[in-house]
View (cartoon, rainbow, N blue to C red):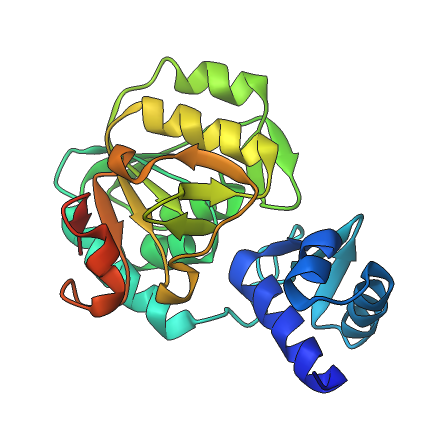
Length: 248
């Protein structure tokens, strides 16, 4: 594989999953970790990624947040946002995670919707607060810079006292066999607590992430009520999920 082609593949993995671990990239691309580290250093020097301990992450949703950073697969995420807001009804209690797809959802909420939103993301809370009819409650805790999300025992304890109608979370990895997965242990624990606090759960996921698996499991596919992608429900890519959840 040519080096420039390899750099493109590494950049895609980082943009797709937000954060990657050098050892995982080494295994996926069948090259040494030293080579991966050199590649990540070069991409960081070009200003397209952020190098962190053990790997690298996307600049899109890193603290401090910069709204000028280009959002990966923006058109797909905007389509997902349009579909997702169709689940929102008047006077619902809703909970949303963080991430670029959730941000697009927050931007597209109709101005006349009256609802209460809980969120663990400071930037999502700020965006939701721009809607006059919404009541926004931010659940605070340790701010994880890798996900721009509040995590920790305090957050999990607060979530245990909440019961919402619908929880909307993003997907780092999703497959019909392995379910919903992530690469960050703290984030996994918070997402599990979010799901426990909700009557129903919707997962928003761009098609590129379908059939991908991260190191840590969040839940089985059967624990999810809605899968929302930019694809039409009858798409062959969604056939593996047939009968396991609602596809939107």
